[in-house]
Amino acid sequence: MSTSKTVKDYIRTIVDFPHEGIMFRDVTTLFADPRGFRMAVDQMLHPYAGQRIDKVVGLEARGFILGGAIAHQLGTGFVPVRKKGKLPGATISQEYKLEYGEAVVELHKDAIQPGEKILVVDDLLATGGTAGAGIKLIEKLGGEIISCSFIIDLPELGGRTHLENLGMDVHVLCEFEGL
Picture: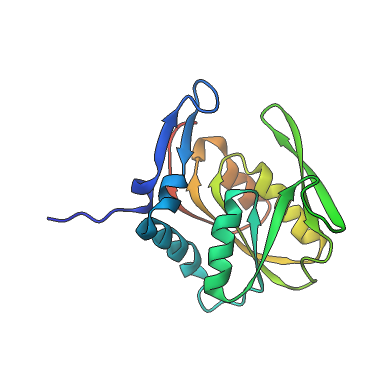
């Protein structure tokens, strides 16, 4: 009897990284495997086949890898949401809270036109802080977010609930318990 691998099977866990007590979910092993990577991209874009999507927005940094591949498959444009100071043109900014402190993400002012249909992608949904900040930037420019798609959800950190409370549809491929 043969068992098929799932996306979750390609993800390794690194204990105590970057700090003691953290179980880091490493998607680089998924990205490195051609079957695993194709499976993840296909599963992330499948719910949106046939829907109008004008742009895929990838959140820094692993969202760039996924977002580019998904945008290519959907035949749409790709837009990065980057950390402050990384984009060369005129930008808009959004602060958000981290576990200890705050961070800022930016989006080019001309990256999204009012009424464009947007799919937001990233590898991991933890507290939803980065995704929430990206959503606010997209909405400031008049983009209409169709959904947010992630490989991994860490349900204990409440990110999915946070995004759903912002009115977002959230799609995840797998969940991991613990931090």
